[in-house]
Image (cartoon, rainbow, N blue to C red; front, top):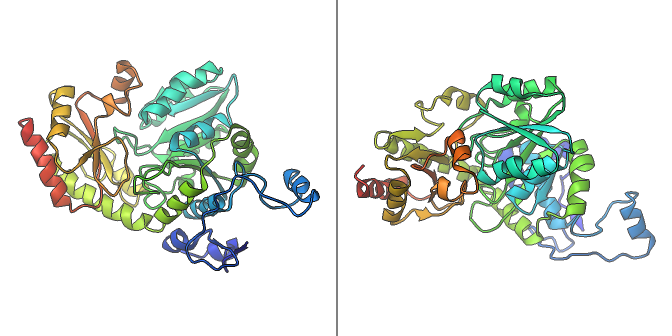
Length: 402
């Protein structure tokens, strides 16, 4: 199998992001296909016995087994790395596989980790419940407060983990400041960038060591597959993450990799349009709901930080209703177009009630500490005409007398 002309780093490094999203990492077989091929194979055959021996020993390049390498998967990994400005990338079976792998591959019994308290529910479940079972201590802090990051550092602190904007409170972490603090203490920073992707925010440019993704979201953008990715230095990916992944098996399927490859071709177009739609819808809601959490609007307390570190604020935001869970569920039940769904990043607008879905595995006390209230709703804005979404949300508000 040969690669398309120009796939060495000296050439791809000159390409602009839109070009990388369409052409980065493309391989072509002797058939000369223009659309990337799907290699649905678990194993590979060899011309002689010495070839697999050399490959398994790391003495020769080439495929050995699709738990470790697959042409379709490697094309996606190369493309994501190019978009992130990373030396290397490894894809995972899902977003949570990416988050768990990024943590566990570098933590051992006796280590300590600091996590921003506002986070995706399963992420907090891992840090609050799973890691302590393996002797790894975790401290949750308000990610917006640099002093809390400083105060949480111990001699055995190995990792800072945060997502920004955070799910679903839309807390925004000062990436450059927190990463600079981490570097002073030899701590590795892992940033969950799923709400933005490289189209809207590049944490590595701001000092992050590792960026993790639920590629299920905006990268695919169609609600079709589960996928994850972890990006970082070649040393981190190859010496820390790869041995863990190779031997535990959170492997992305070739078919899912191919679909995400296709999604990346339109990522920038979708991310920008959906962010624009979300701004318009957020402006409508601003005077209709008691609390609106939209980082793209001046009313958000960290709006200036967002303007410094993000191209746009993204397509996801949250708001709160008076009346708690009963009002939130009644609002959702009154919708006619927007889907009740706990996914994000789809071309279709989706809404969920985090307290009873994405964050339901957490205790009420943890949810309250994170700022996830019973009246909170999260919306992921799609590519519909924003006026149609606004009319649907207005219908929901009127149904609860708001």
